[in-house]
Image (cartoon, rainbow, N blue to C red; front, side, top):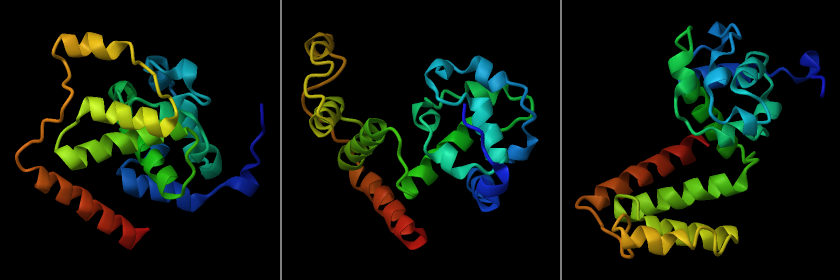
Length: 188
């Protein structure tokens, strides 16, 4: 296991940045481990949730932003529900992903690509167009036939449709995305 030299790698501004953007106080975490014990993805993380919180408390920006854990988090909010200090840990994980994206430190490129493809579908149609999202993701990721055998089964049951169902007011949804992108450019 790698040893972290706290005198060289602590980024106090990072702690403040995450606190401000998430609205949470990570220093309240006393490492009880409830978040990790309840997390359904702990076995897949490089750092369990409680360790991410400890790394945050010690300002280990590079270690956190290059971790797989922040990208594999499903935001199921089990950690948040179980936290005796009432820290919204899932919100902290979301904030860490946002910062990682902003600083172009994405360790799990396929997950980021899926998020981007999902959001593009929302912007275009006002809601998720499942078939289009999966096809676009599979083409961009190079996973051309991933889950292809599921398509006919799901379509046969009427769960998803081959053509998009654009909602009324989708232009308003697109404006939300545009406003966000403009705001991000000003602050980025």
